[in-house]
Image (cartoon, rainbow, N blue to C red; front, side):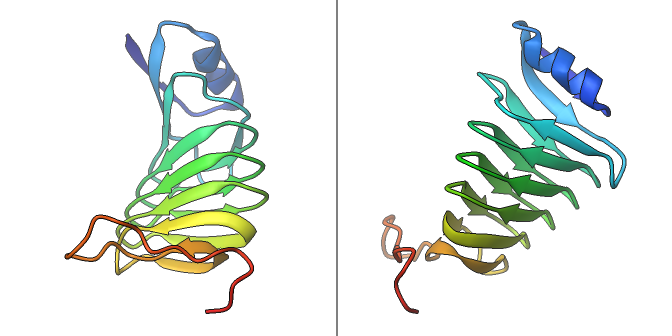
Length: 142
């Protein structure tokens, strides 16, 4: 299996259609938005200042200062200082100092005391005494 590093939409589309490509690294310039509708079995990671819009069943991992906008049932994991804005029924996991802004029905799992979440259906931080996540439903107060 191979890894593809892409900077343009054309390169991303080619990597996604390549059955031999198992990992796709997005390193587009800041402000150049790449769209991802489905990632199949490939792992897609955006890093540096990359900007990605994830739709449908896409799964994206954001690192460094990458910015992700997740729509529909997309899944995103945000690390470092990555920023994710999520809509629809997207699912987000926030690590490190990631920042997440989510609409009402987005499930957000807060995996770091340093990450920040605004909106969404937040799952609380993992405690040291248990491995279970504390969850709050989308419409609940608190």
